[in-house]
Image 1 (cartoon, one colour):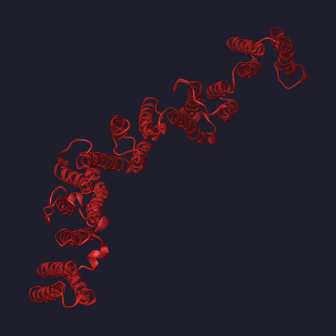
Image 2 (tube, one colour; image 1 turned 180 degrees about the vertical axis):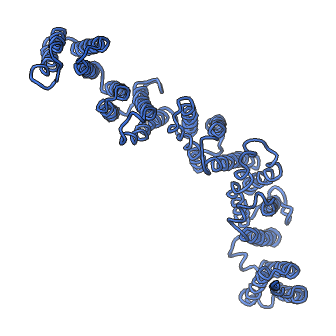
Length: 569
């Protein structure tokens, strides 16, 4: 019946061009096959897959007929050819749900939608393009509705993942075709490229993360996600270069944020005591190698500050992972003593800063090509961390067990001294690397370093009193200890003396007033705190020492004169 209907339609079209609108030609072309298929369903309803085979036969017949008419290029037959092609597509689409379940039906429809997009672009048929995109969206919805939440025997090699992969590839192929043939599209269709690309990527990452969640244990999931995202970014960068597809190349920008999030998540999770755990020893080298490769190949594609941000962020991530791993190893060797792992969290970043300042200018790519990221403002977060760590370590007792405590030459104080030295070296670095720094922070940086050093001196006094005078290392105990209060008074007075003498010799009035402010704090503390323990030896020593230092200050550090204005020429 299909052959007869097709022959009648072709013969009728030879007599007059088809309009496909009247009762005669429209009924011949569309009505006869639909009625015939309905009658066919009554004949084969008891046969397994009978309707599927019938629909598939009709699809093949009309597609071959359309191909034959297209090759002959008979005048006036183009509309009839397209009608036959449309019938072939309809019956082919109908054969899929009749033979397969909902999951594979949706997959086939997605691939069919991608094919329609391709045909619509190359034959300048906008309705075909729109229907193809709509068909892919409907296929995705149908696929999601067909999922039952269970898992197959094998990971990846199963119907759910492979079906989702087909939906993903259909979306990516459609986006690539839309991007390649932008001049052939209508103006408003130019905005379809990115949403269709996002649709395909959503299926790619969603299906991959679903497989990881179903088939891997919870502790190993972050490492699997790390490898999956890293390899996906590497693949996206390769596709962008090979197929001249810049839109998918932007996927690589998500690698560094994902790495940082996974590192922080693993650090906060109780199941991860170090980054090399649960296959992390393999996942992190792979991820960092991919990141290095992307930075190398994308140097000419990224614009603005993106390359510098990526290089600086990669360096900070590497320092964090190295510090975390080494801290865990030291903790194991120290048998749980809290001071020793704390040292590593200050020692490794400080050494990294020192090494970059000393050897960085002589290093090849990437340091040579991105000096600001590795030697300039890109190290500001690391500098800030070193300063904050020094402040945090100042409120720790720093018990060096099994070693005895000695002021200054104990491990914690030595690392804090190294951190302060690193900060000072950073502040005194060459002028070419300080331009952006000076413009950002100005005089605030030396003042911040001075405050950190002052905090360390107070911590040094507190630790000495704690270990040598048996005063508990708590705020309340130290506050009520006159030994500590007297030592702090002497320390503050000595600091004021050093600051004011230095300011007087350098004629720096602002610095001199800062030292004067410390001296005012000392006097206020003497009357409000030290006088509460009248009659004690510590109080007497405190007043005598502070008074003597104030006399020395008054003699050696007068107020610097105001700077005189230069006479006008």
